[in-house]
Image (cartoon, rainbow, N blue to C red; front, side, top):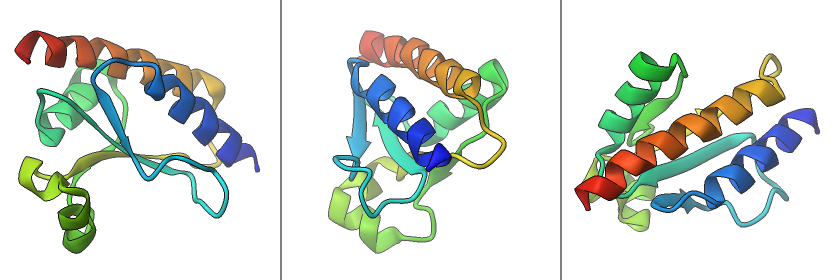
Length: 113
């Protein structure tokens, strides 16, 4: 329940950022604390590198061992997506920092569009 609360906080924060595309995030019901997104104008791998190098935020990028899912979503053509996984050691501060970082990265994407 705690992790899904953090997931909801992250989802709602990312929803408010222009240029962020969320996938399969309409409801927290029957869901796990994993969130997939992309930033318009940027490759998923570039977003992941920026999160890691510039913000010290861990994520995973690519097709996530699910290429057919990414084909269905259409993200296979842009090298997959960026995935945050929320675990028992994450805090509200981690979530807020991730939202802020993605917001700054989305600004880079908006300049490239």
